[in-house]
Length: 257
Image (cartoon, rainbow, N blue to C red; front, side):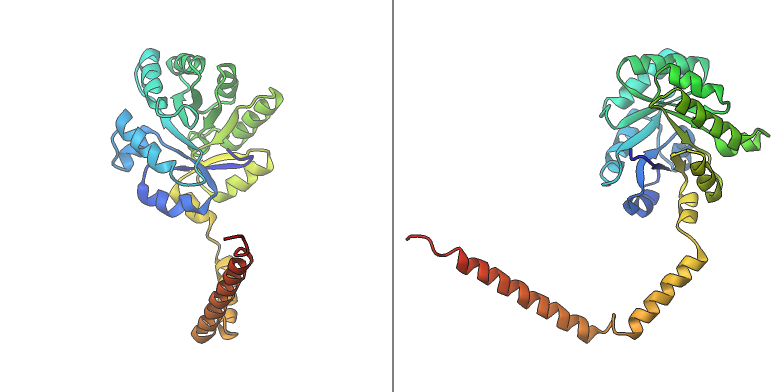
């Protein structure tokens, strides 16, 4: 992903169609709860199909999908199947449990990219780095819900990753308001996954909307939407293009016959 990366936390094709064309989302994240919410099956076939669709959007470089299983062997097996579509663009999410870390270690050994997800404590970033994970995903909002210092924990994770000189990225999840994104960015966090609701809030500001409306009104008053003027400009452009094409044709017709 880019130096600063946003992911869209959604399995909804309607939400993808609205937000992915903006170009700011370099990836999509999913998990079984999101799949259930968006009425999608948690199967390798369904997730592979979703990955194919998401990766058709120009800006999307990664598709993150969560493995499942009660044992590390099950999580590893399902993770391998999920990544088999394209290991370069599929990132397998694994919960930061004892069995999950074991599975993540095996997946990394197989050359599969991994996110340690559902992180609630700063030391879990160290575990994730130790197994060679590409990302660790702390749940900001849920930490706050549990009475923990979500903001402080995420910042500490970021500082830990920086001190370790690790390529692992802190993928901030469970973002509840856009203000937290700016505050965490100021602390060095550069990777976030957000819901469609937060995406909507990121693009919404009443003063910006009013300024844009004022600009449009002024443009209309001074002829920007004058149909006659637009048609005249179109015809002039076509005539100019035709003239340039004719000139090129004349220049290229001087060979021997």
